[in-house]
Image 1 (cartoon, rainbow, N blue to C red):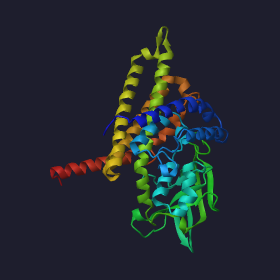
Image 2 (cartoon, one colour):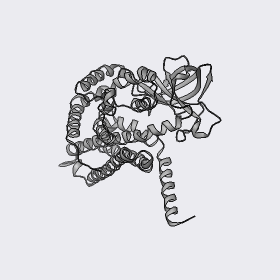
Image 3 (spheres, rainbow, N blue to C red):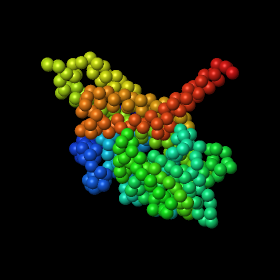
Image 4 (cartoon, rainbow, N blue to C red):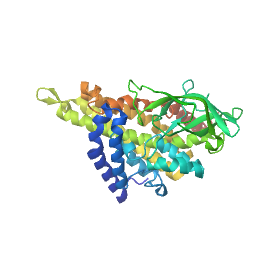
Length: 402
């Protein structure tokens, strides 16, 4: 792949980095200390500024009001935006909306696109994605208890979900539910649009994540579906293809996550260096003079560089050869980049000492919310086993080993 940035991308990234530093980083203290409903109006004003700069929705097609960047270009944008927690939200490319938009673009009917897709891309509404269940392993999405049973022209949905991210304040959910229980495991579940004001859609609570319940977009909800009735016209794609659609969503989605994690690493390394150069460790010495700190900085830089190159290469593979050809690379970047991020954030927090444990810097927030990177979208261990099995199978075939 060509590692040289086009003139267009140079300008875009310069504009984004300047906006992040000038407009968004100063809002971090409020974001970390005040309720979402108090911060959201200020973020809404920043969103309007982004639209005026023609930087809105970088991932999505121009005909829908986005910038129409390809996956590699968007990965670079994700890296720049992730230096601050609200970056992806302010630029209209936040999860889970970004993934839901991709599903609606590919599988939505004209009516679904008019009602849900257009206002979602424009940022007038938010959505959530409801797949993970309380009593089933999230690492095996074919194991699902939530059902959608046909009655007349409707689906009646019953089930118990959690980690339905951003449900608080969202206008609709895309729900994974079993519609074809007698089919093969990978063809049992479907994706169905459920407006959140539908009777039977019950938001039980925002789940405290390491003690922080969050609110609005920055939250993870527990949902009870109790005889929740929606028209069968709310089905997305063919019935029984929920797993297939989810896999299509997750491939490029992992590029988004991984480049966002690298952006978090970049900010953490910046803070680490700033602290090391300004904090005394002894009379006449600063933390930057200590060899252990120097080692942490060097190790972080090396791991970040390796992860970044892996992710951009994977994005290039998806863009040029498709998700199927990049399956192994997708698993590799998911567990490797998540691990790099955790180590870099941990080192940065350690360099900050007691200050790092507080919300006076953004590091504690990174540590608290991004630890889940090794769990969601498939736990690290599942990805490692998958990669190892594929490598062993290919090796055995090449050497004729039975």
